[in-house]
Each structure stands twice: as structure tokens, then as C-alpha cells.
Length: 348
Ligand code: 1CP
Image 1: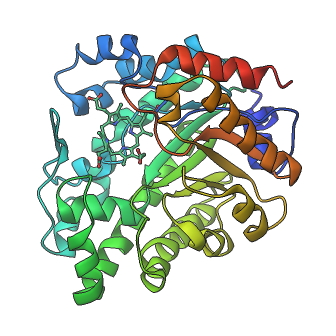
Image 2 (image 1 turned 135 degrees about the vertical axis):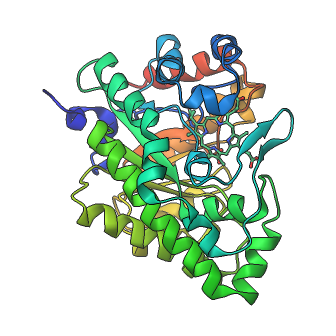
């Protein structure tokens, strides 16, 4: 069976340049689509939705029916591994995720790795079903949260925070935090390796809480666990491209790229193309980074900024996957996504 290696998306991640950048959007499946809200209402709750392969497959495919995206992303969530570790994950309306805050590293090991993998096995079924449903050679992205970001949720017990507790762990109990990160590396290696065995063609590591970390802690909280994870995956025989997304890394982006071993890097809304081009190795692939809020507004400003981003990497001869700088918001307008896609498709 032909793989996805001839797709524009995978070729770009491997360093090739093309007329137009391949495009997909973070959170391309989800609440901005009325058809997602409709099927979401049929599930008991969000976790149930994620663990029901027929629903997750459908949610993954919905945006592809509307728009000519160049890749699909598995419908799941970075917090499923914490649910599988029995951290009491629930999604409360209007509040986002809530978990039982972690007291000590060893709490995470209460559930064996094989039980964790058993709990997330519906995700692997979703991947398998997606590979059968997608056109041959159409790339499917698997993903996980990076150890630091998952640790932030585990320790804080909720999202959208200033990361106060996990940062205080870093300053007062670094050994405990290292043990948390090391264990998350082990679990995430297994989780991602299994996604690739089920058919994922590329992997993305979401480090959504990498922002606002002093640079000496960034090294051991973000770079080191990511490097170990990438090393482990390679040692386990995983060869697919890996995209790292250290959101808010700022000037630490260059160290992240130099030291983690990822094949491509996701850029956030605030990254500066001229900085990226001067700080990253020539030809290193990037992904991003239109402001998701500009897709609420739409119109000329959206297309002008998309052009600026595309032009900046084209001029540098840098492989570029077009995307947003963070996930699309529930109030983004589907018709603005259509305008954006038509604009990029018209480039060739
Ligand atoms: O009820 C609902 O429909 C819940 C909304 C929702 C959706 C659609 C959540 C809860 N997760 C998801 C799906 C999801 N999450 C996907 C697959 C969809 C796609 O990309 O097309 C992916 C890749 C994620 C990844 C994810 N989840 C991240 C990393 C990316 C990012 O936005 O930084 C993070 C941080 C999460 C945690 C999470 N899950 C859900 C919410 C509302 C949040 C964020 C909470 C917070 O603010 O901390």
C-alpha cells in the first residue's frame, strides 16, 4: 500500500520546498463547525466522545469534507493519558478540564503502563479506522502533549493557569518534578509508538505551556524531556517525522530545535519570521503561524498576514507548512476558513 511519504505535507516536513505550502489548522475539527457540535451533543461527555471511535473518526473527517486540507489530525486530546492514569479528569462546561491535583510523582504510577494503554486503546482503533477511511497516501497526524505541558495539567489540576504550582515544584522539589517528567516520557513514548503502529504518518508534540519560563528551567522542563521522548521513539523504531510545538518559546526556539531532535517546529502567533529565519538552521522546516483571532475577523488583514508569513519562508527557501499560531477558536467563521484556503490553493 502506498504510504503518505509522497504527500506535500510529509515531503515538506522532510525538507522539500513546493509552490504553495501544505495547509492544515490546529483544532481543524471542533467547535467552530456546526456539524461537530451536532455529533458532540450525541455523546455523554467529551471523554466518551474521544473514546468512541465512530464519533472520533467522523469528527476527524468533517473538516476535510469542507476544505482541501493537506493533512488530517486524529481527533483525541492531550489529556487522555492523564485520564488513563486515573487523575480524575472531567470537562466541566465553561470551565475546561479539571483533574485531581498531583501530590507526588509516585501518584502517577498507581496505574500500570499496560492498564494505561488498555484505557487509550479506542484511540488506536480510531487511527486504524481513519487510515482505512482516508484516501490512500493521505497523511494522518498522531499527537500527544509534551511531558511538561501534561505535567502542568497534572499538578495544577486544571488548565488556563499561570503554572504557579509546577514552577514552584521546579524551584523547591526539582527531583519530584523530574520524576514526573521522566514517567510522562515513558508513557508518552508508548502512546505515540502505538499510534504510529496503528497508522499515524507524522507526530506532533504539543507543548502549549512552554511560555514564560526562565531560560535555565526551559532547558530541563521543555527541551530535556522532549529530547528523551524523541530519542526513545527513534530507538523504538519510529521513523515518521516529528513536529515539536513549544508554544511561547520565544528566543529559546533555536535551542529547542538544536537540541530536541524534532524534524520540524511549530511556530506560535507571536514568533517573528525574520528571527526564525536567522536563528534556525537553513532549510529546517517550520509550521505556522497565523493568529487564530484573525480568522474570526476575516477579510483583507487575514489574507495579507497569511501572505507575509508564506512570503517570509519562501524568500528564505525554508520548507513551511501553513497553519495557525494556536488552535482555531470556537467563534472562528467557517466561511473565513474557506476564503483562506481558496487563497492558498490559488498559489499553485
Ligand atoms: O466539548 C468539546 O468539544 C471540548 C473541546 C475540545 C476539543 C474539540 C477539547 C477540550 N479538546 C478537543 C480536541 C483536541 N484537543 C484536538 C483534536 C482536534 C483537532 O486538532 O482537530 C487536539 C489536537 C487537542 C490538543 C489539546 N488539548 C491541546 C494542545 C493544543 C492547544 O490548544 O494548545 C491542549 C492544551 C488541550 C487541552 C484541552 N482540551 C480541551 C480544552 C478546552 C483544552 C484547553 C484547556 C485549557 O485552556 O487549558
